[in-house]
Amino acid sequence: MAPERTRRRIPDATVARLPVYLRILTEQGDEGVDSISSERLAELGGVNAAKVRKDLSYLGSYGTRGVGYEVAYLVYQIRRELGLTHDWPVVIVGAGNLGQALAGYAGFGERGFPVAGIVDVDDAKIGTVLSGVRVRHIDELPQIVQTKRVSIGVVATPAAAAQDAADRLVRAGVTSILNFAPVVLAVPRAIEVRKVDLAVELQILSYHEQRRAGGAIHAVGTARPASA
Amino acid sequence: MAPERTRRRIPDATVARLPVYLRILTEQGDEGVDSISSERLAELGGVNAAKVRKDLSYLGSYGTRGVGYEVAYLVYQIRRELGLTHDWPVVIVGAGNLGQALAGYAGFGERGFPVAGIVDVDDAKIGTVLSGVRVRHIDELPQIVQTKRVSIGVVATPAAAAQDAADRLVRAGVTSILNFAPVVLAVPRAIEVRKVDLAVELQILSYHEQRRAGGAIHAVGTARPASA
DNA sequence: AGGCACTCGTGAGCACGTTCACAAAGCAGC
DNA sequence: GCTGCTTTGTGAACGTGCTCACGAGTGCCT
Image (cartoon, rainbow over all chains, first blue to last red; front, side, top):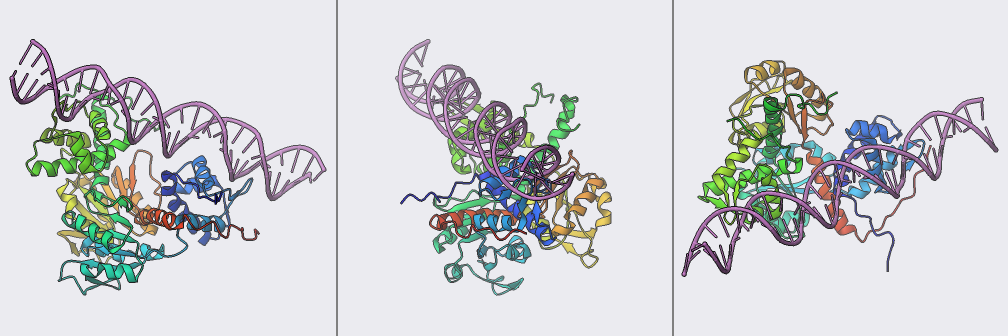
């Protein structure tokens, strides 16, 4: 059959902003706000109002003209679209500094991503408990993934071990990976990978810092485009 | 010395990829590779060759047709463009799980971002030493920023404290901020802010997971709850 | 009921980023 | 020098995302 409920494809840029709207709406809801305009939501989210409306329009027409959006209802719709109607347990590979910090980050569990397990290769770390989660041996990965129905893996190993970690995650049945190691992972096409590279972020800031200083050497008058 | 060529503006998307090329080139250089083609660099970086060439062309014409790019020279040019010819000390606000992990992350120092200091408000944490850096009181921030000539600050506090942390960083004279807290910071226009939000990344993965499984699931429960 | 103030939803135009495709340029061998 | 092979650098085409501007609903007030 040809169901017209075929889910519209939502632009990547919009998908990346929905979690931000969701957080703001949740906060506003907690503060007792029932209804919110695109203008206000844009202000809180640091974007412009037209963009908010366009983003939300991909979900459907859930606003009320002349009034705004009902906070609770919008929260529900965004959560549904993002697949947050149920929890997504995650497994962390690597119990070093970063792995420990991630395991201890309450935000994960609160937002629907409970830590189902954390594994490492280092025998010295195995058995230790981080924020209530016991570190287990990496060989137990398949079992954790299967019994806890984990589909998201987090790579928090040193760069040299990251590809192996990813391979093991994929073999264990994980279909999405969040990679903190500064390497480009090779994975089957069907696997979704997102990368967070702290050094890259700093280098981007460095570029702007350098440009700020360096711009003065040459283009004095045009140094500040946006300021008024 | 004197760059006779007016500094071209480099597209944001390219700036974000240069650090990746830089890392790969550095690795290749260490392995004894002298020369590399855009094809090979693209393969290692997980992008396509035309994009690599276009990105590098913004730096100038530093390749040799028929041959490729000289690794050492390209490393130098990218480092120069990114402002990595000298170190950029950073100061970390927040000595919780994440702050500690960041302070302990060797990658920072290695890539030219030594931790000049880490501060917190919690008296219990002050004085403790993390990876060779002593935690100091947040009131010492201005002094650290000034004596160590810090221009990049890292916000690693809980969400509720992030805006205050940012305000303090700005007052202390920092001009770029890397924000790990799940809030949109309000800062003067001249301040460059980049945000890394772990929960957002997971939610994006969740969207794709849900979409993968849920092509089949049709929109249920679109009935709107009774409006007040 | 009618008018007014407000805010959504969206088409159209523009800006930015990516990919394609090919001329230009270099190297090697003869 | 000439031929053939390789790889860069880049204009042009294309696709995606952003912004603007305005019609279309909605609620409130008189």
